[in-house]
Structures are given as structure tokens and as C-alpha cells.
Length: 274
Image (cartoon, rainbow, N blue to C red; front, side, top):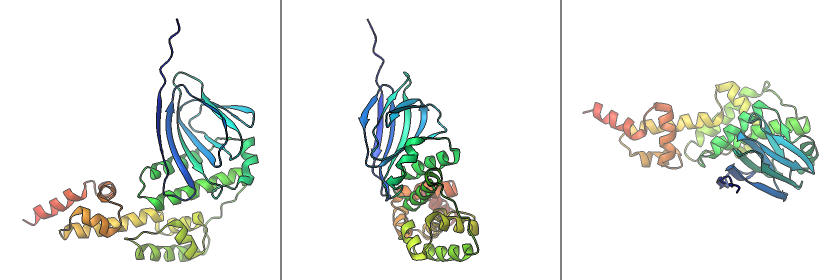
């Protein structure tokens, strides 16, 4: 009599409000085999645990190193399966051909497993940003850097460092962010107005001010929130007034900046004034 090993399927999937990403998938499989299939999108995967075996265009590959990145191109048949009782945990981004053109499918078929630790870190940070749907500028910025790194692998893309124009671009972007603290600014809007490449614009800003644009914008919102809280405004009203998605969004960033949630911060100020 044989004992079947227990099947474990944990899966979370959603479509983020970020152009270029059709789906985010986080999954844990202990006994699963994907049939041979294709996608219209690029399949960008990182392993968090375990090992996976897959075939891409009839050639088999194995991945068990969580430091590596798997990239499967659109339109090319592939499968996938667990190789041990522990299975594998993975996080996947499905990227449109607006992010990576399908003409790059050939290099991806030739080398679908990328040993690139900086790329892996960038993808991890993008997943973290996508967990919160209210951080669009951060997610768009992190996607731009993931795309740039993938193009280095697939198309011998060269990264241009900031030049003499860096301070000028950075100052103009800061003006845009300061004018849009409450309404926010997308990366596409910024690059369209300033006629700059996304990652180049972010690098110029970071070089000039020591932090990326999305972090700068969050800090400005926190500054405004503090003033409103000290003036007696309710946290829920403050969140909307300074541009956070909701009170939970305000709570998360405020606590990270100040070490206490906004309601406690306001209460401490009131107690001091008694």
C-alpha cells in the first residue's frame, strides 16, 4: 500500500494598477505539474524556496538556486513541475511586450536562468511595492529598473550614468513632485513632461537629493500630515488631504517614519498641551 504525499497549493494572484504588469502570482506547490502551454506575456519568476524543473522549447532546465531569476518568453511552449516533496515557493510577474519586446524571445530561450543577484534584489523589491496597491510611483520606478537590467541581459543594453544635465532634471522633477503632493505623479507623466528616460530621470534625482523620487514624495506627505495632526485634524481626514490612499496607507508610512501611528502622535501632542 502506497501513501500519497499531501498536496499543498497556496496561491495568491492579483492584477496591479501598474502598466506593463498583467498579473502578480505568489504560490507554494508541493505536488504540481504544469502542462505544456504558452503565455502572451513574459513570465518573470524568482524562487523563494525549493526546486523546479521545466522545459522551454523542448529543452529541460532545473532551478534550485533562490539567487537566480527565471525568464520565460511569450509564445514559447513550456511546462513546469515540482522535483521534491518540499515543492517550491515562487513569485511571478507577467510582463507585457510593452516592457520587453517579443523580438527578444530568442536570447531568453537560449538562457532562461539568469544568475544576477542585483536583478533578483530589484525583482524582490518590486514585489514588495506591488503588495501595496497605493504605492504606484514606487512600483513603476522599480519596474523600470527591472526592465533596464533585463535589457542588459537580452539586448546588451548600456546604462547611461547621469551627466551635466542631472541637477537640472532633478530640480524640475522636484518641482513637479512638490506641485503634486496630494494628487501624486506617475513615472510616465514625469518622463513625458521632462522628456527623459525613466531610470535616467530617477538616477539624476537620487544623485542630486540622496533619495529616489517616490521616497521624497512620501516624506513630503508625512511632513504635511504631521502639521495637520498637530492642528487637531483626524487621521482619516489627514490621509486624504495629503495624498495617501487611505488611513491604513498613512498609518504604514507614518509609523515607519516616526515610530508611532498618527493617532498616537496626535494624542501625545494633545496631552502635552493640557
